[in-house]
Image 1 (cartoon, one colour):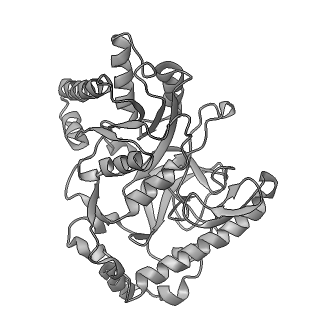
Image 2: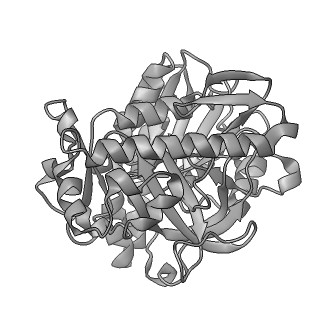
Image 3: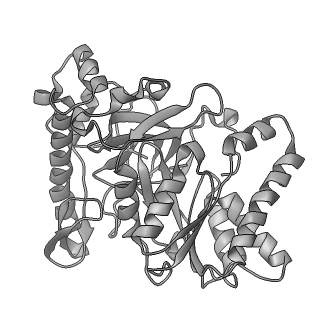
Length: 397
């Protein structure tokens, strides 16, 4: 589903009243009113620079780093331990190729300092060829706790149960949503599906079988919603939400009448037009929906809070400093495009478990200015990169 760009060693911030508080994303930020946003950008650029230095030191220290990066460093024409001092210095690294994530041995990615901890495998892709895999220890918990803290409690009541209607399987999304439900004091009910099977059916032109499979999934969701489980919150994809809403309408009900008050939803089908359709036709004014953009390498980007003045425009903000997205020039990935201009999405991930110093996503979009809730660069209009869009098959997303 869920990306990137850079300028002079970038930013991070929040804006309310003067104080130093824990950031949504794990660092201490100075908080003030919107009139001081420029100063906050400067201060939090320094915070991101510090985060960069810390994690480069971690991943390239022979005592703590992973075998993959310690070996890779031998091929660089610079020394990460001495020559990377701010976020912009990540441009010194060659672009990360995600084909490096195909195949094993997978433990080459585990930092030495984390060896022996219970480890999960999260996969991404894999419709054709060997899937790409990353090791995860606690990142999915941290990512979804941080995301949880951005959700309005009036729409996602603490203690309420969740319906997770989407792919779990090798992507392990179920683990993340289930943990978030538990973090918020609830229980997650999961309806699984296999997106790889759906893509295969679509490529073979077996549209009737796709519809049957979708109906099978919705049958299960309907059964759970009708079983008295006090489910008020939900994660799903746009196509599945639409299918569920239409089934409820056919039976004389609605998403709201089924008890759902808050939905977070992600996928390539979450367009500006679909956002309007969902809010005005599928859900009604009493059901809150927020778009999300994420993937196995980044975690979860938050959508800008809905503003009628935006005409349903969707802008995403990555969970800095753990991950940053920049919108870069199509021909020069080290150059950030001006605000409002179109470019390719570039991802940087820096956690103790994973280091990605610059990866070109399969997406493009427009660079957006910082927002008061997420005061760092965003990206809007996310869509498949135009040079590969015609070869992209959309399944349940």
